[in-house]
Amino acid sequence: MYRVIELDVPRTMDDDPAAVAAFREWVAVSARSEVAVHGLTELVWTAEAQLAMMHDPEAPSRLFVVRDEDDLVVAAGSYDSKTAAGTPNCWLSVGVDPDHRRRGVGTLLADHLEGIARAEGRTQWKTYAVSRQVGSATGPGYLQAPTGFGAVPEDEAGVRFLTGRGWRFGQVNRISRLALPTDASVVRTLHDRAVAAAGPGYRVHAWTGPTPPRWQEGIALLETRMSTDAPEGDMEEPEDVWTVERLQEHDALLDASPRTMLTVAVEHVPTGVLAGFTQLAVPDEVAEPVFQWDTLVLREHRGHRLGWLLKVVGIETVERDHPGHPSIITFNAEENRPMLDVNEAVGFVGVGSEGIWERRVSGGGAGGAGGAEGAEGAEGAGGAG
Image 1 (cartoon, rainbow, N blue to C red):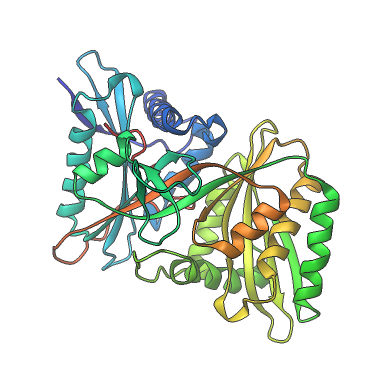
Image 2: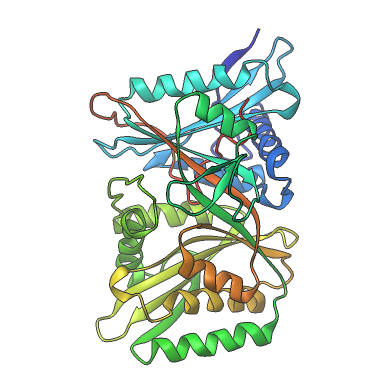
């Protein structure tokens, strides 16, 4: 009755029409499954924006759909992992069209994806499942994160689905939205305070597009440290090493997408080392929101309000150089109070949540091929059922 099909992911949106049409169907079903949970249409990326990230040579994505007897796509999923030898982790996503839930479709697709993970010897599986915003809700009806920060509603389909399959709830990301334009006086005041706290020992740099050669080693180090320094609850992952060559390949993919990547970095002047950075993906279409991607301050440089400085300079640069966008969207771990403090101070408001789930299995060494990292995580299992 239902069958799982792996897609031939197009290289460009001008590729084989059948492959492009199938990819668009995958994007549409993935989006419907998540919007049905959180109701946030602003979080939906176009097919054009998503395609650029599907062919990362370090992490090419494998995409799957489930078709019914009428050849209608009723579910969409992905299998993501790193190509580096010995990598134990992978990311799975399952999304079922809201009109086709509770028919075993999600189970069929999840079984297929987990089978791939087992066959490749992956022993640490993760998924990102969107949830509606519940704030600091506690008590009956909510599943509390083991970090002690955040919760997800027990009655959501994705929560029931993952719990029933033996996945462990590990962490909550808060999805926050900043309406644009901001209150310029508030942002400027925070900027001045952050500059004063940082002092003359730190200097801000900003650029759009590919990383300038001068900063490539520094950004590669910061990307590597994202895997070790960012809050991850008790779901520790192996170090994900970025080289200059990998960064250059990644920048080229982003440069080919219908978005402009804005990077703000802060230099430790005495050493010339980049102490922190943030990236904002600015869509070519002005009606779409800006997405804040990776943000990190190296542990050894914390305590100088550099996170505040990066955040406000990013906001000011977006408003000055890319005016007209409705908002900035960002994801932060609920236990990352320093970053949530600055978000709340400039006007970000929580609009949704994302549960991070893990399953560890026994097995041999990991295989070499797989899918993609998630700058904001994989699509998740928010629409599973």
